[in-house]
Image (cartoon, rainbow, N blue to C red; front, top):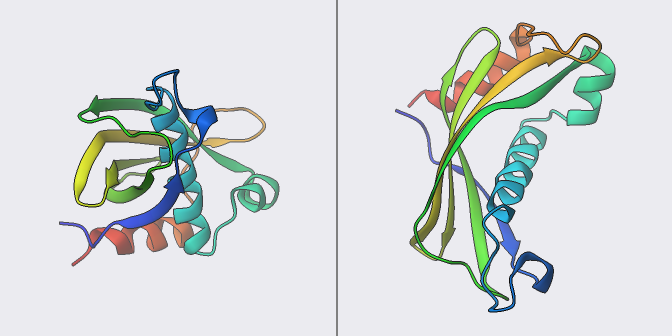
Length: 138
């Protein structure tokens, strides 16, 4: 079982919506990406530094999204990250977009750790894996 989710607040802007003021489905993936980036930053890991210094990046290997309720123009929503599994070169996450206590979008994401130069799978550095694994313990 995992700890409480990391959450990142987001405001829904006009650019996120269709003519009816409802969030376009692909924008939820953007919100999930922002939450993942801020989650890593909160752990003291900057994605640019990982690419430059460790020569690794995390790429989305797979994603599955369930759209349950619409977000609308001017809503404040929260994008969360919960670690489900850390493998040698991958991380499985659950991500939810919610408004107040209502789940709008529920997703699972598998990230692959890859070498910047070759774009081939590479093991997650031990210090990073340890920090990430900390989220999967009670």
